[in-house]
Length: 176
Image 1: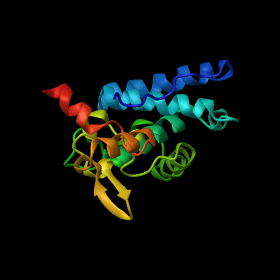
Image 2: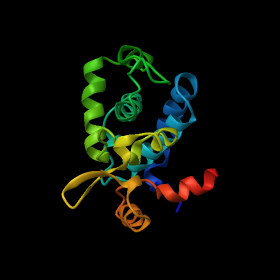
Image 3: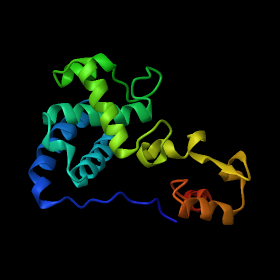
């Protein structure tokens, strides 16, 4: 089974906001990060555009752009020097001309609005999904288990409930 896709519908009234916002996030991601971050930032911008009312109509778009990148970085360990890509929190804020406190507050708002949390497979870089142990941990009969060790039937149920990003056995078959 393929990984579930993010919605890409944007209300007409928000299309200009979306274009300007993604111009900022795309530029930053292509200069400092990678295409995976660029794509996730677009999904986040799309999701914020669909909120009713959209929070993007309040505040500066460069602040929202930085907050989106920070939120995704929070989930994907962007600020860990041992991971690639890496950028420091200070350099991220400086790149958008913002104070760290502004970034932190707006990022918290983005994470709350989009329900982004640490180890969230919905917002994880695709290249890290397979190797992220936390992505595959589920509660099964009151025990935390690695779903990759469970039967295909359990894996399919976990996928249907959006607990995991794809059925691991399907991905393994594709790489053989």
